[in-house]
Image (cartoon, rainbow, N blue to C red; front, side, top):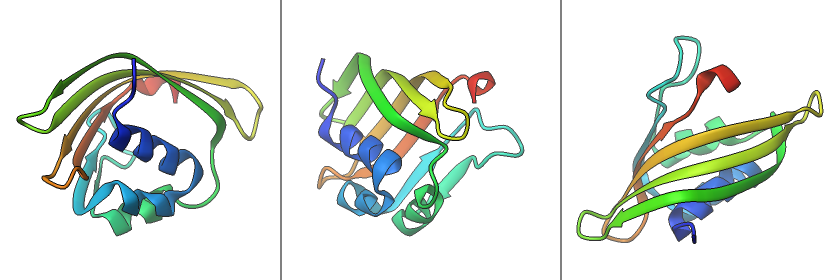
Length: 124
């Protein structure tokens, strides 16, 4: 199953080159982590804030993403996907395995206007 191009662009940017978020995000887009704990970031507003958040040293490397299932509602410009991800903790070399459910809404130009990412916080 193919990953939606905007979703693939976001994941590539956050794992490799945060500045590339400008290529796939609306300037006023909002990213939310509803399962974030009190000590984690739960909401990021605007592409500049997204770049600042994802820029800098990486906690994980060698990311691999696999679409498990996805549903697209073209009329609402909404994509919901279950993504399986694997990476390596940079500091320890240990495996990191996570499953995500992502709700992504696009603007009329095909840029991400909202991204809601659910994950198992016990794995972080």
